Length: 160
Image (cartoon, rainbow, N blue to C red):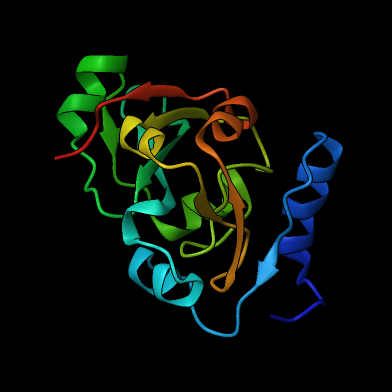
């Protein structure tokens, strides 16, 4: 692990510190772009990866963050039934504009603007989970309770 954080990762670390968290952003020597890559780099299960996916709200056009277990695919119908939000695909430009990060490094926190957040209840079965920290090779470890506190997200069953 490198001790020098890139600006995007530093933004995440500063957010965590300002919010009273002692989580440490780590730059990994290999890719954490996908849940499988992240799990291999970290040495945890794919299901312990809290992948941050940005969608577009079908009615308002605003960003919606879905934090899903790395082993799950998001079921848009389950999200709609639980939240009333219709998820539509967001392109890379939308993601960067709305949250300030490139796809493959989107963290669950420290976004350019507030986003409605939905959390995968499957993450609750783990005492420690790992999330992206702003770049395709940076992560931080946390627990589901802190994820909920930091994001103010709604826990739902969202897996296909």
